[in-house]
Length: 134
Image 1 (cartoon, rainbow, N blue to C red):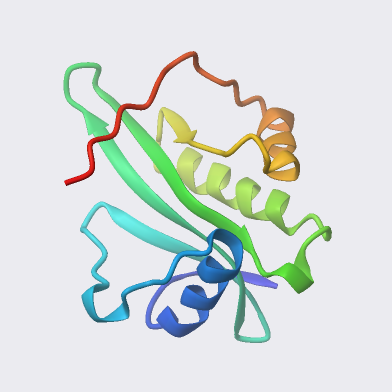
Image 2 (cartoon, rainbow, N blue to C red):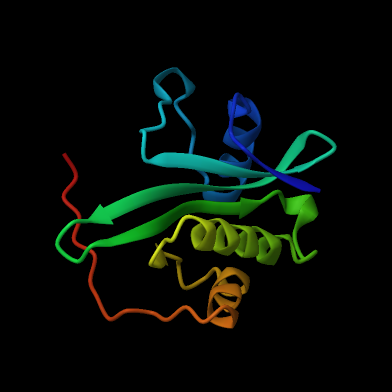
């Protein structure tokens, strides 16, 4: 197993996202912003896990944050501590880049994922997310 950053594995990550989150990826409009990267976990050149990292800069607080989206492992590779390895790699990269904090959201029914985050010292902030669909 090895970690790589996304280059052209859109078909593979689309399948994992659909399997994990029931989201269809619109491949024709897929564009990563300059502050985004996708970290892949590969086994024999096949993508088995991924997360999207967005770097957020707060000029008022002078902080940099990794915001994580779509943390997922292929079903047949789950329960092998690969989610933990993925999170450890994100932590390693964050430390190397002098990132101040990591943020993410996780549904309450994703018990295994949430246990990983708690094990690594993450806390749940008391906040409400406001959304306006346009």
